[in-house]
Length: 145
Image 1 (cartoon, rainbow, N blue to C red):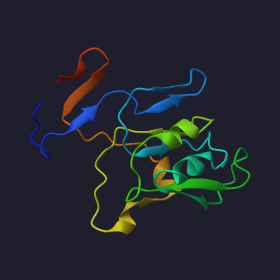
Image 2: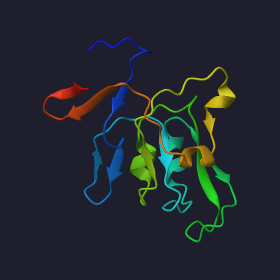
Image 3: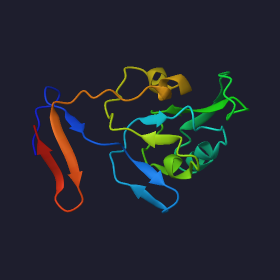
């Protein structure tokens, strides 16, 4: 499949990569920018601990949001200059608060722009693609539209 990037961009259908803790397996999906689900994060810091052995890309930051489930007011921030998109932080989260979206365009002109704060991670990904694709486990990547 050849695309004329940046005029044509992939727009993956469905959710990004996530982990099913009950089944103990990762759900297939694209590993792009992280999405932090504010209502589920308790500030347990397991995502940062999992990342420390690989890329040291997650730093826990104190942000006062007054959420009853996160009494410590500690939220993960991701440095995409260091992230290797392995998904171990998503696997480590016992509350399904961290998932990976299909957003893959994260380029920046300086390293400071690659550091995403917890507030930036709360924002859902914006679809920007023109070519609809779907990952089929038997056929691979299928395009339509």
